[in-house]
Length: 618
Image (cartoon, rainbow, N blue to C red):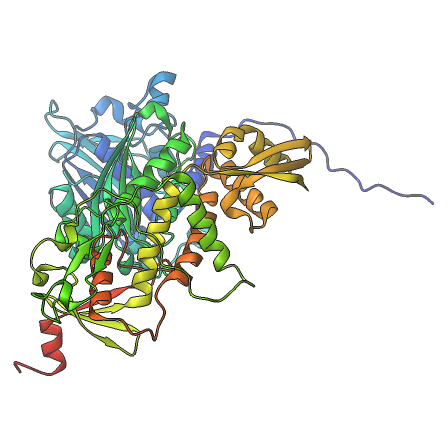
């Protein structure tokens, strides 16, 4: 049987592309929409030392984009060179490229923009008698009138590539993207004034201000009220910003901003670190709000990995991951009640025991119970481990359903700060009643406090269990018969590369062949977990993020289950002493505003809100 082969197409000759086509190809990477042009031009204005930047738009930036600044300007002789591809004043050597400290450096933006639009540049330096205007299409250079600085006009974007223009959205959508691009710059540079105009109308304006005021101006006073400022230093890293409170989480991830050396970036490593810090305080799929400024030596970060410079690569990703996660965990640790009391929530909560009888404290009224401070009792690492293991075994499925024994107090030498002052000064107030065995009502200076007693006690127990676990090393349990499983080449490489880290986490994972891994020991606390699934997840996260919180997350899930079962149940009637003891523990416990599942543990109703319910004063 004859099999005829299809005729092959004649070979095409290899040719060098014309400069204009090269620039249009580059524009496909750099210029995605009008907001891309705005970002690149504002970058250049900031690099020129501008203190005031005006962005003027027509038809959402499709018909016209004009960016004016009061920077140092461009000498007339260099204006034609500014439109050449790979012509820049930012870098001159490989050393400069490896330690970039400016917003732009590639020298592609102006050439790429000019290839898909009608562009003109007018600029004047302090030494020039007047400005000069260059038409990018004709190359004509003419005298112009303007103060020191630069104006870049971009008109009819994508006029030379109509197919690209068809992919643009409505004018309103493109305008929103342009405004967001300027907002990102405004948040990073509070010392610079910004103004956005559309169709001759002022859309937004931010005058030079402090960093805190600029955040309030751009994101609103509500963001300031619902977030905490933080500052964290770790070696060559300096982190500052604001972490949104869990109760102010949003349904969309539209208020998450990260800058590296003043450059807005999107980075999976940083996002993962922040998300892991919010793990046990967010409910469901809610998204946190935050602004994070990372300062790092330029040589430790590579910004030359993406044409739009929105992605970066860090030399030590693990150290960055740990620093970011720790910064947000510390920022979220104090509860609102601890802040109101001025307590150090990082201090382990002391154990409080209510006075058993009125005879023990005859001077205390029934509705003002007194408390005793239980002196700290040192516990060994073995006692802590046995306590955890016994508590886990008690609530393992299939075991007895009897109520667990009371959890021992966390050993601490801290003084009972939460009891300082009169009962009226307690942030969560004094208990006055219990509703349906579910909620505790308390009275404080602001009005009424409503507490979900199970959720609140669950958080208290959970934090105590975490503190016990954190005080001891992760104990490894050797397996009598190693567990082997088929692995990918990436998993084998990750196991070999991170062997030491895995060992510190209590796991001994060794390759048996190029496609097989064997687990020879596991963390003792995770004896009931799926070992293969845990190992796979751990290796995948280490390979992607160069760091992992998988094991800690798995341990905390067990502790959360233990805390849920060990916490006081609904329909249990508490005495006033027990209610007040729980309130005092909440005041001294980290993250006490949410339970382990992210649900709120308490709510405050002020007198104004109570008066409004009954129309008082109207």
